[in-house]
Image (cartoon, rainbow, N blue to C red):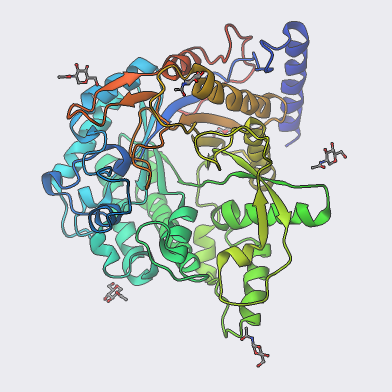
Length: 514
Ligand SMILES: *[C@@H]1O[C@H](CO)[C@@H](O)[C@H](O)[C@H]1NC(C)=O
Ligand SMILES: *[C@@H]1O[C@H](CO)[C@@H](O)[C@H](O)[C@H]1NC(C)=O
Ligand SMILES: *[C@@H]1O[C@H](CO)[C@@H](O)[C@H](O)[C@H]1NC(C)=O
Ligand SMILES: *[C@@H]1O[C@H](CO)[C@@H](O)[C@H](O)[C@H]1NC(C)=O
Ligand SMILES: *[C@@H]1O[C@H](CO)[C@@H](O)[C@H](O)[C@H]1NC(C)=O
Ligand SMILES: *[C@@H]1O[C@H](CO)[C@@H](O)[C@H](O)[C@H]1NC(C)=O
């Protein structure tokens, strides 16, 4: 501990010496200290958003396929994941782009219905397995580390017909079997795994408010039940990795979590509590169980108390058994954060107790000042300082001895601007400069950064009306032609030099993450 503190002090001192000698590179005060040697630069993507081939070679419908096919308003007219970027047929081309970009890692997801069309282990689709085997082999041949997400929102519709994530006796064993299959088939080559991506979004949106596939509305209950089953499935799978695979495969397993930075709207005690509550109901909902073994106390108290006021005999927030708590505690090998923006939290007096809702359980008003820079999306404001505040908060609450990986970050526009150096390029530069400050000033053990995304894709609901890619994709051509934007060139420079500006001083930190 002491040694660690001394090292941090040394790093901080070095930083100040460097900063004094060279100053900052330009008027936006971009750091000119190189990122650590071994920092993992990459891109992130998700199967439904890029692959297409929705029914190719034995794949079945996912819940997102099903909603796109059966609810015409789910996506903009004619825009959905049926063909997407056609990545399913463009492995060589896309690996070539990743090689050109110089990235060290590619975070992608495996489509559960492509490898297990019924969702269950008794029906393995070998053609689906072969597609991912080929992708992984080609990435490794080019020294690009695969970072694989097992569930990025698109589980088989067949499982949903039997209750999906609300049905624990179905989904937990099915997920554990699926994870086991992926380790058996790919675990010798893949060292970085995420069981789930952003379960906050899929549980709250998919099973509570109904705003996401599978569009189930079960307000104030469905989200908690889904999350509970996600966490139990994650922990069980993690322990299978411990028992059967870790000794030979020696990989890392975690869960990809997201939150905006929720800053306090003022220095009042009420607003500080509001901000903390918002963070705990979003990130802590999942991070507390996998790090400490249970839901945040504050969340437990709030939901228990409000359930009681609703005259319910049981809390709407389910309870883990002691055995489950033990399985959960420490079930992660690195921390993750998908970050995009920031908002401010303001205390809100409780509404009269009524129909249960997670929103009322949180009981916080969030807002963004009018003068914060907008992107195409009103909510995804450009707030670079929030990135630093967020990783510092994560470090302070959860510790960072296993490292923190930024698993997504990116800039929203209409996707068509090829000369996006001063918009998307600047966005990454400023966020990364703040993360660089987190490393050298705050001593955060940040291990890598995955930009969202290599190319324009199918955004959930928005199709290709909103996009974040460094490559443009021509969705009007069958070829889905990829064209680099200026941001691609900037990011390539950053990942190949570790430096955000023209030249940098060397980093005092070396990471050895293999
Ligand atoms: C939950 O899954 C089981 C199979 O494990 C199935 O028998 C049951 O019908 C499912 N429940 C619902 C409500 O669909
Ligand atoms: C909180 O107080 C600090 C100094 O005490 C001040 O710098 C900061 O602007 C205040 N924050 C807000 C949101 O008022
Ligand atoms: C709960 O029960 C109490 C006592 O019967 C009653 O006064 C109150 O209105 C009930 N609350 C709700 C939300 O139903
Ligand atoms: C940072 O994280 C890496 C990767 O998990 C770990 O090996 C290293 O010991 C951590 N460093 C510190 C200073 O905690
Ligand atoms: C494209 O981005 C540049 C900044 O890099 C900006 O100046 C320009 O207005 C953008 N063009 C469009 C059509 O939005
Ligand atoms: C298809 O797109 C790729 C770039 O994504 C391009 O190199 C190739 O020339 C295109 N082929 C045709 C036939 O347009």
